[in-house]
Length: 237
Image (cartoon, rainbow, N blue to C red; front, side):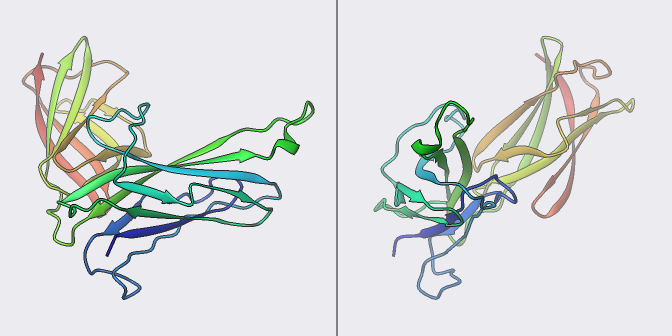
């Protein structure tokens, strides 16, 4: 049976937006029918909007500003008109005939478009785009295995995380500390995903002062299971 996820979109601001949507390609199910359902909703407001949804691959070779069409996953229905207080329910279906190997990564883009009747000279209306990661996994997917590297380039410190597992890892609050106590923070919120069999890089915008080639650093972050701590040697490039 085709893996299916379901998310619901209500017109309004993205309050409590879901971090990601996960589908399992095997018998694991909350419905007993071989399908896995997830729901996503945002706060509803008194406005008419049109909703449009589409799925695109998300991978190490896909830039976030680049949308590559795919025929493996579809969003249904692709568009709908929403009345005030209503929800837009989208089914994300993997239609590819080949089985999922490890984990496949996509992003669901949902555009909320104001009704033409509200587009006049006295009102300001915006198109709101939600970008939601979607993952299709086989039941026995290999868990993430992270390793870290650090190097200096053009006076900046660059941190690289490599994931040799198949399952992605979601990192937040990424921070590094040198042996002398100098710290660099890459933000308190979401740092990003390291997809399976992929790498992710972060560059410190505040320079590399306090970090020397050959010195040791400690790396701190959080994933879905709690705090992470690792170490690496700073390399010169």
